[in-house]
Length: 254
Image (cartoon, rainbow, N blue to C red; front, side, top):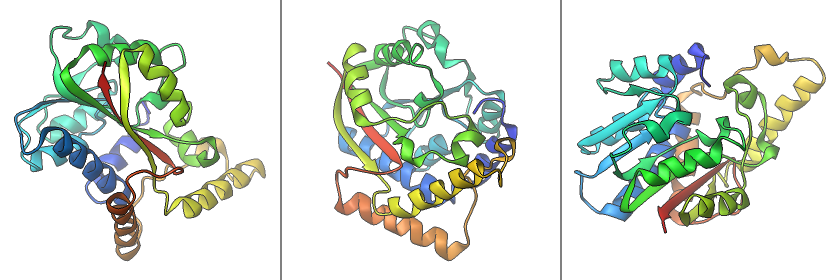
């Protein structure tokens, strides 16, 4: 999404409110609690932290050692507005960035979709090198080509994933998957219908690719809260689901 200033501005404004971000932030928080209990002194790196919404959420939960890096100058500027000393760095150069520093947990949400098949394995290896023993990598990813739509065009997504992709990639980087689930399963028919409609509009020429809009917008309050409650219920009741627009994985080192 680098270079799309208007999308970063929307993200900065809506991360704390939009149902999808709220659900993802809580999913990461529950993962950290499951791995480290009540500890709030663990070292956390958000690699590809965007405008800092995840970091801000974790800070409000009491975590004290938070670090962020991102390859977008726009994103880094918004993080600085939140008071985070985030470092501007292209993640393809992560191997050379503070190689001696390791973390208990690394978060890398919706980042891998911007990397080519050639660039992604070295990034995973660099992330693995930054994990402490018993550390975890937490990653959310765009899933299933069926969910492609205007959002992908608007934010520059290169690819979508299925679990089999990471089952192949992670061992090559010295990592193993602890847990994986697709999510927004309960909402997937609605999301799929919306994305299929978007694709039809593009095919028929009713919508121009250069005018594509992302899904980062705030619905009316009642709908936003309803969508959030549905996603929250899914997370509580269904530990693993077979389908959804996102793939959430928890990984540790061998």
